[in-house]
Image 1 (spheres, rainbow over the protein chains, first blue to last red):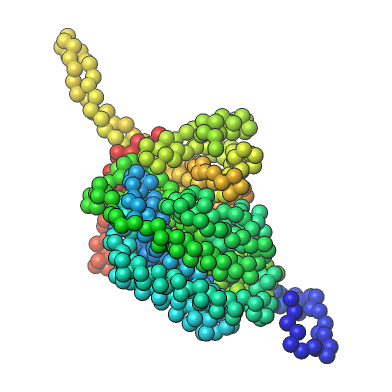
Image 2: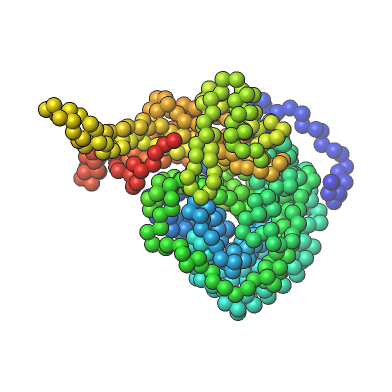
Length: 385
Length: 220
């Protein structure tokens, strides 16, 4: 699509060869405003075109997995908040789900509903802020991000009044949730959800058909379905390439089989599809939330049989995974019968989604690299662990 | 999805010479795994990916596990003849298991939406023999994760296109996720070791830390 603001009197000659036959190597990051944290890319440029790109990790590495092996099972729960610090609720859920698999723990009905509610609220605020960040990366400095943060704030307020913390929620426990949500909390959450479509309409009106945004994102960073599957890409990024794989449908964990929702799929696998995938998924999340508010019944939120202190799951191993806002978030645990896991492994979706960063960036200009990176949706707390 | 026994039988038929062993998992998670022999692992993985009934095209999680060398002492009653009289005496038998490193791959199918099938590869030992064939050519998603295992566990993946450290810096020499890893006395801030640092260095001659409950695991 061309942006024909004004016609050039004479078209510039096409650049066919390098100026002096040498590549320019630049180091983007780690202190780059749009690398979403401390992340570096070694980029080789031919003129303005990327011919090679190697990501460099580890600036935020604190060996989360080793720390997980030296502390009790429950002791890792607050630490999972720090993985993807935007989505602490889904991190909690993925970890709780894996431990529940490992120890064979049942979860009460109300707790399962609360988990769905909180996971979908997390997805809403993650996707909302991602759209803001992505537009910020493209040069729409400030305004869209502030619009997004205004809405995110409402959801963070809900998290705060429920768990005591806005981002580091530490809310879920093995066999349930830490505290129950009162009727007034439900009422507030329902109000936030009811008001959300208005923001989405407004935001989409401003953004989705914007000519500059389309020029910056369509046909940029295309990812084929075959490569996406082979490279283990998950989440909205995979579905933007047209692969119908949503763990909420496939695994049917939690109470997701009880809800009616659709899985949006992209056609082209470019940055625009990845952006739209988030906008469409938010609508489905709102649908799930509305159904959950209707179905949820009073009841206990903790399984009383679960031992909180001296919790020792039986010998064995388990891999549990959920559909996090960024993709498949899994925890692999090996128990030796002791109070601490023998092996504690996080399957970080944003780390594995970066596998194809070079494939997507090759042949595009250096300005597009930021857009492509932004459309992957990474958080360095999870990438480096 | 067919049972693990059927998968094992068909894989052994499809890849001549492959030895596959089923590792049981006693936990309620019901996730047993297949132990592959290193020489045929890429061929078996290719079979698992391409077989029309399996189509395990999504390699979700790749990770390493460190199993230390360990001994289990048991008291056994042995019959012996002492001074012409047959007696039962207690004897302590020490059984030792050699240490090894393990790479675990969790495979799912995106096409047929089933899984997981878990495959494991084991190294010969924890020293120079810590080598495994890379599955990156079959599953691209293993690329960064195998690099991470190389970095944190020190398993050399043969055939990996770009085996470099990924999370630790390039000049780092040890493998922090190993169970017997000790953090260095000083990083870069202390050029001449003294006092606390020297005190810490003395601990290096002491035996390995005992690991909570590790002796109770019996490797299958």
